[in-house]
Structures are given as structure tokens and as C-alpha cells.
Image: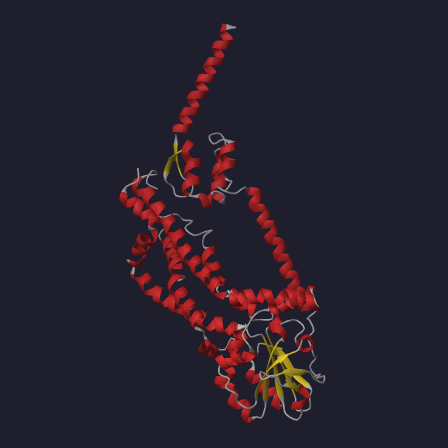
Length: 265
Length: 189
């Protein structure tokens, strides 16, 4: 009994001594190579290299020190502070799902390109009535015999503002010389958002009543026909015969192409 | 124990880190070159995305807000980028990881400024939504999203600029901690 208990005490003492020795032993930090006591290594890694705790070399180091660094310490070290590993994993899973959805949507677009919204190119442009800033109703068919560029805009759209400025400064003279009329038509109710009136909007960017540059506001049905996807900046090129010969988004960068299409160039 | 100098160094880490980096002539020369390149890139890209054209002529139509943002990013964005390169090339004075995860912040800052123009004034959102919605549902969803992106573009620009500054601060702070750890021991860091 005595022998046995004495033997146990010796073993415990040895174990404690070995533990203390191990704790006092120093090693080089796997990241910065600073000399650090082994028992303080987890604290050192956590406070000085928080971004490296998951790195391959730290994980390798910790695996090799299973005897001196406890499992709990290793697990705590690999858990970023203020967040759980599962939390990060959930974000990563969500990120992967989102990426798959985006890639899927892009692939769908490539395989099944969406048909151009509104009136198709090559068909006759359906006539509609728009209201001029002075309140006079005007029909699109009134412009038959002249090529027309019909531009559906929202007056709160910065791209439309920039496009209006581009037209006033660089393209108005070319359109005027080619007898091509620009119909700049505000979408019905400005697509449900608040914006300035079409007249004050265009005036702010270079419109001062030039001939061949006509402003107006579209009805709900006209907006639905010519801009069913509610794009902010969509245009149609209508030939002198009333047929849509081209269409697209972003007239600001395409005034030259629209003019060529209108004049058959 | 933290000394007054170390406390100051941790409170304003950018100053110490930038002073040390700009002591090197190469970085002093690289900063204006990189800054001008970034500013010119934004001056061209921001109006280009709005107008739907990437010709160089679009730079003539840059708005004052876009120009201000371009200059701000030209001044701010090169600093964390150059600092990360400096730390990477001088591993003896700092952590090897200076910017491993945080290097994503400059990327987020760089893209943050492009987001409003890319999503507001291009057909991206309406076309994407048109796949799932149609008619009145599309009208109810698409314009409000684009309106927010358009009207609050300044907020996106401000966030991008703050991210660039934050990236600089985090990179510099990390460097300062490492330096203090080495020079004055763990208590100082």
C-alpha cells in the first residue's frame, strides 16, 4: 500500500517536473522566428500573428507539438477571435452558392440571350403620343419622312445627363446637318422615382430649344411598349419610313453609331 | 510597459510607417506615378461606365464629383499598396503576413467606386431582373434599386475612400505592433 502510494507520488512529481521543464523550454515562432516559451506560444501566435493561425506552417507546427500544447489551446488558436469557425464556414458556403448563382445566370444569358426589350428591330415603330414640355400632345407618326432617334430617359439618371451633355456639345451639329431628329422622351412618371422635369433637366445640360431636338414625356403605355425593362437609357433608331433599324442601351456612347444607322451609312 | 513613444506609434501608425517607407527613394518616386495612374484610370472609367463607352473621349465628360473621387483615390490607394510591397520586401522588419488577408481591403476600395456606375447606368440590373420578373413587378423593383445607386453614388465613393484609408491604417498598425514587439518587448505591442 505504502509502496504503491509512494510509487504513485513519485510518478506525479516526475510528471509535474517534466511539464514544468517543457513549459520553460523555448522555441522559435514558426512565423516570425522570435524565441518564445512553448507554453506562451499560443498566446504569441494569437496576439501577434492572428492572420497566420490557420496557415499551413502554424498548423504543422501545432500538430508536431501535440505533447506540449493542449488540444483545447490548439482549437482556440484556430478559432478567429470574435467569430466562430462555423460562422466563417457559413459565410464561405453562402459565398460559393452566390458565386454559383451568378455563374449560372451568366451562363443562362449566354445560352439564351434575352430578346431586345420593346419593339423589335426590322419592325414598324408603333406610333404613340407624347406630351411636349408646353403640354402639346404629339404623335410619333408626325415625324414620318425624317429619320428619328427616339431616346427614352429618366431625368434622375446620371448617364442620361452625361449623354445629353455629349449630344449638346459634340453631336447636335452632325444630327442637324443630317436632318436627323432626336426625340428625348422622359419615361412615364420618371419610372416611379422623383426627378426634375424633362425641360429643366435638358436645359441644365445644353438644351436651349434647338430645332431637331425635341423633348417630351411618354404615357404609361408608351413606356411599357418602348421600355418594358425599365432601363434608364434606351434608344431606337427609326428610319424615314417608320421602321426600327437599330436599338440599344446607353445612347451617350453611341450617338455616332445611331447617326450612321439613321442615315443608312 | 508602454512608453509614450510606443503609445503614439500605435495611435498614429500611418505616420511612422510612411516615414520609414518614403525614406526609400524608389517608393518616393513610385507614389506619384502610381497615384497619377490610378487617378487617370478612374477619370476615364467612371464617365465611361455611365455613358456606356470606353473610348478615351469620355474623360472629357467627367463630373466634379467623379473627378474629386478620382483624385482622392489617386492620393490614398497607392499608400496601402506600396506599404504592403514595402513590408513584403523587408521581411526582417515586420511580419511576413502584412496584408495577406487585409490586402483584400484595397481591392474592395478600388471596386467600391465603380459599383454605382456599373450597376446604375448600365442595363445590367434591368436585364438580370427581367429574367425573373416582368411587367409591373419589374417596374416596382428595378428603378428603385437604380435610383438608390444613382442618387447615393457619393456614399459609395466615400465608402471606397474610407476603405482605402482603413487599409492603410491596418497595414501600418500591424507593422508598428511588430516593430514594437521586437524593439520593446511584448508589453509594448
